[in-house]
Length: 99
Length: 378
Ligand code: SF4
Ligand code: SF4
Image (cartoon, rainbow over all chains, first blue to last red; front, top):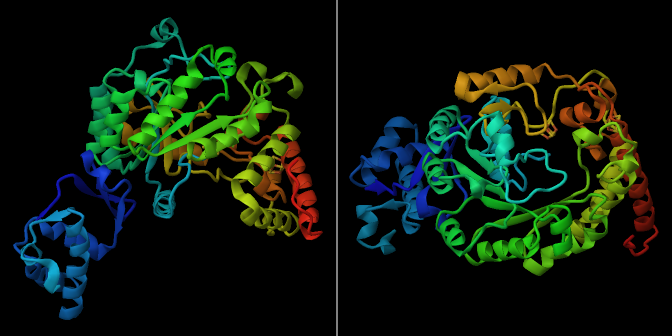
């Protein structure tokens, strides 16, 4: 999986924001504010093979129920995936219908 | 002055957070003092000869080094201004590289130099917004006030081109004696071009006019500035919001929150989460204040910012203003107090008169609203 390299995660005064650089501003002009968990998930994308690996890492890091973690991670990354902000998610490349 | 005009909720939240932590999240760089126009009231513009006597332009690479330091320090919103920023050699490279660092960029321009090619470029690599100053609503004003005949048409063309390429544009105008009759025409541009227009009616006194009586200065006198401001607000807010604004403003004046009357600190973002850097690299809390100042090229960005924060904190405003019941209608601030009275701690007579007149008109409006009268446009 990989994050679109035109998006940059920045931490400003303790707040995480996702900023479009390059021509990505044609899709999204502005920024996306991320919660701590969302920022953590974002940081895993480039090194994880699939969503299940991120679910496992999130559960190592945060005290959270497996089903809730899975639902939130799939939901969040699906939003980014359909906007091409995150690419090559195996679970979604096969067809997003079964989500 | 509002350093980040028209900020969204997320942007405001970030700035609030930045202010609490003294993070310089918002800044501006005045890239050069040169401009293709030459407006009478401009306090920045220098001719090429004048500029060369004072120093030379910093290169894009020098600014990019500062950019890297700014990124480290947490700069997020960056305004590129001048002079006319599109005259800066290497503007496009600098702009693209700063964006790559994750800066969200706004550009201030007079709009006259925007051609198809530049509009395509900005449409592809979108800034947060382009702010265009409109100096009048006809060629005569552009010729007499800005000494740039044909400038009006060129500005309108620039605005149209940007809109065609999906770039966010906001128009700002300021009202002076020279164009006082144009207020409604300026506000009409909003509908005609379908873009937001904000007209400022208060201007700080120009250096060379500071000691003249108000009616001999090029800005409006305080009462007229107040009337024009409220007239503009009424049009901007419309029949839904304006009555609420009137009611709240009058209520706040009649029921001021009890505050201790002690000299207050600056309440704007300047020197708390906002800074400006001029073309020579001098950092200051805001464009209007000439002090405190520190060179980013000599000291580095981080050290210059620390210095600005410390010095800004020492600035104290007048105790009378802290507890004034008209504070919400008044535009006084450190810069205004300094320029109007000569000291940060002064109470600017211009502003007291401006606030008093604002309150008088608002009370009148409130009475009309309560009597169910149609809010008449004055
Ligand atoms: S000191 Fe005054 S002019 Fe400067 S940023 Fe603050 S409010 Fe604006
Ligand atoms: S300048 Fe005058 S109106 Fe404004 S806050 Fe101070 S005392 Fe009040």
